[in-house]
Image (cartoon, rainbow, N blue to C red; front, side, top):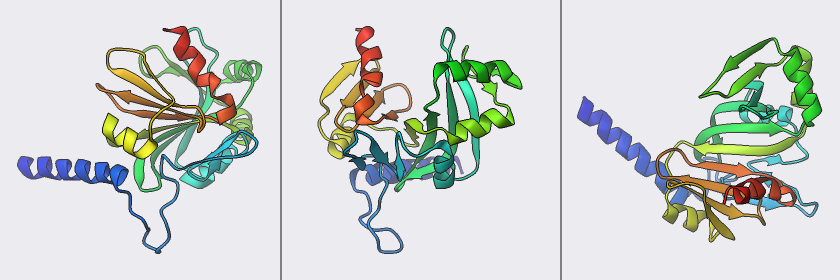
Length: 221
């Protein structure tokens, strides 16, 4: 039984990697597969459309309609930070690629502070990061806010070959640690984080706001 499970896990991993390298041209309805992680549509106003969502325009409520109602919304902050209102989706797919998704709402810091003060509950997440459970009114306000960023964590591990083949050559590569390297695509608003020891992360922002991703990386160089 253990051998069979191990073989199945290997087959699933290989199949998932092949989706990145050779995605299906059509879905079950015979239509081209859309919403894949590398299919980013840059709009004339400097925003972008990723997996059916227009960053800077669509709201967290639109993300819930797109990916399902099984979602958690809370303010999340590391020590010393104000934090952000974030929606957490599990078991989503970008086209044919499965993974987890975090959608960040575009809410000013002063309003985030007020949401934290009114929070019904505060609890620790990983390490010292805290999560504030929102009141019903604040949750409704978060759902009504436009999307600032999308953070997609694919279920499979990526490598440099897959990244370069599917996303192309990045404009810049920045290594932030011995095992983490950022592949930056400013014209598409994408920071693809390749992690040799953990999960890869794809961060999407409107291209016109790409400095929000790059500037903190440069400050650590």
